[in-house]
Length: 135
Figure 1 (cartoon, helix red, strand yellow):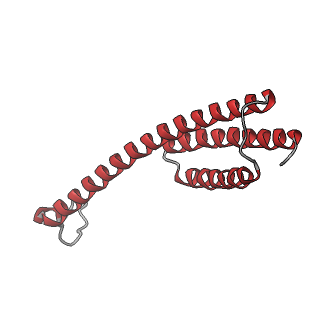
Figure 2: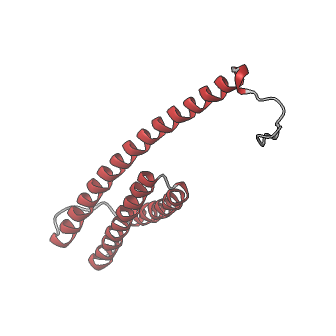
């Protein structure tokens, strides 16, 4: 089993990555609000990298009891960060779903306009003519 200092260091690194994930989550939310798909893709990539780091580090952390105050406080901090991350993720997901519904509606409306234009015989113009008011 790892000594106490190593465990504290691992937990501190986990907390740091969770804070970074929260920051990236805020960027994701902002990208969804601005409809910035490029920024959103970059933020998703960064979030995935952080999640992989957290998962790999978590494998090195043994099952901990809350009997040591130094560990208990860090575990509580991690727990709170995870709750905040989940709230942010839920909020961002709701915004993205709302945007998706809106975009689908706009696409449907564009398709209806295109069909209406194709089916309207008056919309087709004949050959172009120059009209200068003299002829």
